[in-house]
Length: 192
Image (cartoon, rainbow, N blue to C red; front, side, top):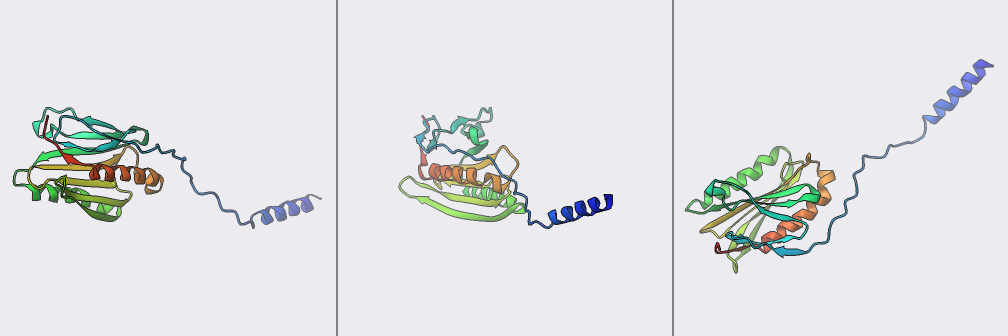
């Protein structure tokens, strides 16, 4: 009797192993993204642009006069920041653009691809390049803007989480639109 019971249990167990069972893939939390409404920053700095209302613009506190107009745009609910650095151009525009390009291409180790998009707004004298870095790079969006004579701004988006292109994709796409809007609304200002 024990043998028969054992054999039946073994047959049932072996039959159970034949099912086509695939475990669910690892999921991510649903992210509710806010509505896009933009406002122009109005700081006494040599540039201005529009940022979304769910972001905060803040000048960095520094005693270094070369970094006087450096700033951060914080997307707190998305754990992201766009770091902005400003430099005066004094015959060294090539140096600044080459440095920006070098910073982007340092990500080639982790990047799947790097896309470049030139930007030109002759009416407001704003020219630059937008870089989109695909993959698990530390910074997936970078750009620089210049008037080609006096001013240069460089920006880089960073997340305060471990890079994972799958989980960051919706937020990255969302904030990339905001960075593109920043570039499209960018203007040079006389320091007030």
